[in-house]
Image (tube, rainbow, N blue to C red; front, side):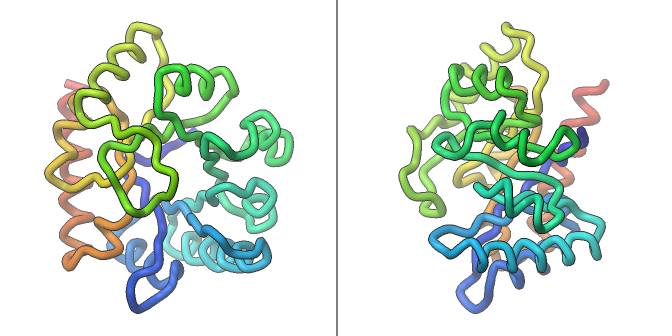
Length: 216
């Protein structure tokens, strides 16, 4: 299953909505959008998911819905992302079927192994540093934490794409990728940043350069 190396996690900007933020990221070249709506009724989330999916289709991008497998299915999204306290991957797979993408959050090596055993398609590993985007934050990993965990991943022969997440800036990306991480997920960097297009271009440059170096 194709997993993009740059994931945008939606959040509403100061003057706008999830959808306005998503469209700006798509206009700047984003290819992977995760709709992350908290503390809203499911009918509201479903309507946002349908509109976000239409936007993603228009720009040739993929939509992942955070937390809600049923809404991911109803909205026609590419898949779902599940937190550590959300529905088990196997249960979500029974709802979505084998062709939909399922991502799962991890904070420890035991979490990573659980996600692999459960049949997740990719793992969101974090947080890299403290972030106000998420409540009930798991212990911060930092660069040293990623280095240790990715060493364990390599020793275990785990091939699943692992995405770093949590307060990541453009300056962090190269050193994070050097740990063996597959890609990065960002939110505030693109939602609140003054130069969205520039940040997007810089992130993809760093990702593409690392991919070429890895292949060589």
